[in-house]
Image (cartoon, rainbow, N blue to C red; front, side):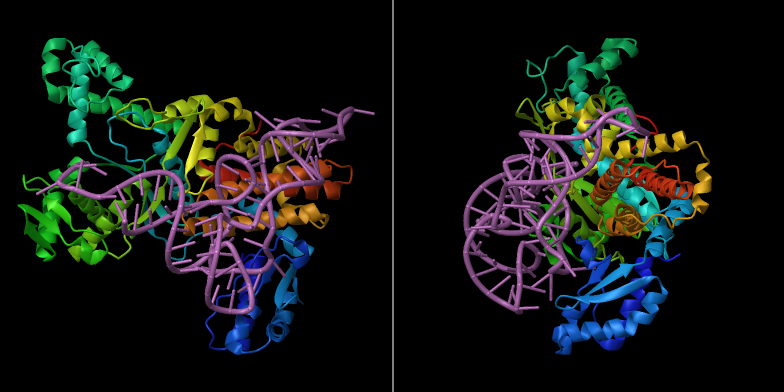
Length: 548
RNA sequence: GCGCCCGUAGCUCAGCGGAUCAGAGUAUUGGCCUCCGAAGCCAAGGGUCGUGGGUUCGAAUCCCGCCGGGCGCGCCA
């Protein structure tokens, strides 16, 4: 069933085409803050003034004249204001209808089936198994998972994928670190390998290895065994953290599989065949500058090995070949130089991969403050705050909601002291509280909530009630916009606003009144709010508790 | 130095395909529970939207310069 907004938009767009034939303009309905300006408004007449060389008000009058009958038939009215704005007002019955619609659709409210469903991949976290997950990974997990859920809500078939390097120099470094630690070498002490990981978790792995390894001396010399043990240990740990965070991946992709399958070699051959490579200083270079990069990149080093850039390209070829027409990589901005490079590599191959492939959501790194000082995020230092720490301190719901509540590219300061001291004032509770309050009210009423979907809604005429209905009606549009812009923070802001409207309403009006018709209508509205909050929170991976 | 991103209320941040866009939370101050959950509500103060130009009838929003901050700029990953 098309929403009133869609209907109004369609009718007005038709009128605009008749008034301004041949002029390419997209009609956009705004949501005015000022209620005097109606429920929707458009400045399309002002925008048409120049191309039509006419007064905006005249144009507005003509549009309104054209659309009026149809608009009114569909439960709305038009008026012209100011310089030529067209304000649209919906009748109360039109607004009330959304409540029944939500209760009918239940957990599907906001979800749509795409006209053309796409196979979409969101790749995120992708932490190498060289240490516990840090807050940056937490931000990625919160963003990526919400993004994936958002795209699913729009009818796409989404795969969540985790990519990790299980064989490179960093892994070797990990093995050496564990080995040294197991042999009793202290970080920084004599015999400590250069650039070794010094975090405490290395000691834990070393002790665990010795405890389970049988003959410690013999096992310790077997660096390969140490490496396998350490990787498995850290993978388990990361899995546990992700599970606690409520994030599930569909695919774990190993970098080593690209080598094993000959994909890396094949990519190099493909690049050479494209004619975009050249030899210089004993190395093989790719002309990435042909594709907007600021310098050419080395593909094969003079020692014969490949740069990390090659498996990166091979991996994305693989994504493409698996049929993912749309891929979104969630990464920190510290990797933004890879964006141009990977795209350049894919274009150079000339195998028909679309130009902007893949999409990226880059997030600024999270700065962690504690005791008024910054805690450096560095795997090597071993002093960074982990995802697990955050969850233990403020709870999974708060961490997820908080981390997704900001635009990805804005810098983000996570003040540990504040989160600890004021955990109860975290915005997530505000939204959850609205949900719990409604649950409590429905329980007190004691009726059958399923019945509310059929209840008469005509009694919902209060200003706050109609505003709430409008807010609820925005939900699907908000989701579509958030999915389109890859901006999950919009969901968090919407929920905050909806909860705010509800709390305000709750304090102003009594829901469980004597008058049955009024009570049922109000309960139906509240049930619809509860449903919408639950649906929104589910997308963010945050629980919607019935009691708090 | 070059490239990308970011500068909006004391603080943390929305808004940025122009108009009906000066907003939210928090903090501060003052009110509201014999009443459905006060983890709540109501009200007040607080910003020349970093800065200087430009485009436009109209700019927080688009363009250019400058200032400030972040991240990149390896035959590291």
